Every structure is written in C-alpha cells, then in structure tokens.
Image 1 (cartoon, helix red, strand yellow):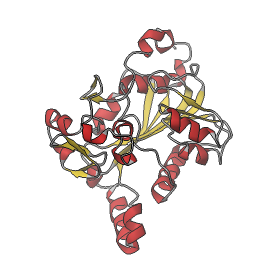
Image 2 (cartoon, rainbow, N blue to C red):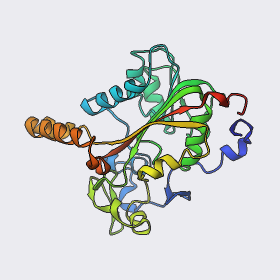
Image 3 (cartoon, rainbow, N blue to C red):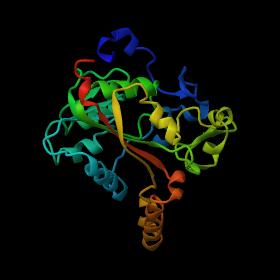
Length: 287
C-alpha cells in the first residue's frame, strides 16, 4: 500500500520531464535557449517546467468555478500541487485559510511566500504531508511536466482523506496546437505549434520531449489501481483571454461557440482535461 512505500521509492527520479510514459533523463536543451538573459518563455526552466500564472483573468476564474461545482471549499484543507507563485492559492484562501502549496522552483516558492503562508519547496513524487491529510488536492496544468506522472498521481491520492476530492487540469493530446512550444530544427520555438500532438508518439516526442499531453484514457490511466472513483471528466476549451483583450467580439463569439461545443462530440479537441476524482471511503484501514 502507498503508506508502506519506502522513502527511497518515492524519492526516485527527480527533476522534470519524460519522453513517452516512462521517466528518463531530462534532454539537454539547445544552446540557443540556455543563456540566463533570455526571456522567461524560452528559459530552460520554463521550457521544462512551464510558466506559472502571473495574472488572474477570465480563463482562471472559469476554472475556479468549475472546481467549485464539485468541491465545497468553505473551511476545507486544500493542497495546490505545483502552485507556482500562488495564483490559485490566493483564490482558494477566499474560502478557507487552510490552503497549502508545493512548488519545485525555489525562486517561485520565495516569491509566493512573501504574501502567502504554507508554501513549501517539494516534488510531486514526494509530497511532504501525512496520509489522508487534505480535503481537496488540486493541480492545474502541472502533471504533464513532472518526472513521474504516475507516482505524482499516487502521492495526490495518498495525501487526500477518504471521501476527499482530487481535481486536475492537464493538456489534451487531441488539441490542434502544442501550447508549450516545440523543438524545430534543433532549436526551441515558443508558442502554439500546430498538429504536433496529432503525430505518432515517436515523432511527437521528438518535437515535444519536454512535456506530455494526454488522451482521455491516458489521463484516467494515471489513477488505475488507486482507491479512487471517477466523478467527472470532460475536455474544455481555453479562456481566449488574449484574443478577447484585443478583439472583444471575436473573443466573445469563440467563448460562446466553443463552450457550447464542450457539450458535443467536438469537446474531444478541446484544450485541457478537467478531471475530478473522489478517494474511496473504505480505504482508511487499507492504507
């Protein structure tokens, strides 16, 4: 059982990224993107581990409301796995003071801790909390970056109390764009790169070895064998915040059309998985 796992097993592969489904050494990024003075979106850290949310806009607000559809945050003990600079932690604290966050980047931990309590440096594969500790465990577009996504999923289950809720957002493999950039001609290119995620795994992983994307079955498989029940799973479209800021009517049209499409077969090509799981009540003694 998870509670009996050795510390050594949980402390295996550290640092970020895999190719395919198994953890491997992080690939060396091209020399063109390694200098310290490059913009953050093309820094090695941001390529491998993603960029945190620096602002709160419609897209984040919509995701928070989705969480609240399935989770009572009032007075809950909440953990944000991969909290970045604490963007969601701040919002959760509108409903409860007992909010915690872990983050792999020490600089982001320091920045978040200037205003927020309970932010610690830790890895998703080795959460520094006891079993059955949280009412809610949340992760927003993080699990695709960790070294071992299955171990991270197992740790999220371990620290969630029986009856507690796990909520995760993660990239959809069928979305027409790879939003984390890609390696083209041996050089990292930042931005939304079309059609890479539709390629077979060996080709896709050559262009995007720094990040995963999941099919619906793939994201659910991370939790196979865990004492959880699937509560809800759908694929959602983005917030279109940048487009709306420049062209309000276009952004409004896209939101109306594609949020309607989330309830049709067209949801399969949306941006992100929204998955909600409940830890089974009868697992206390088993764990």
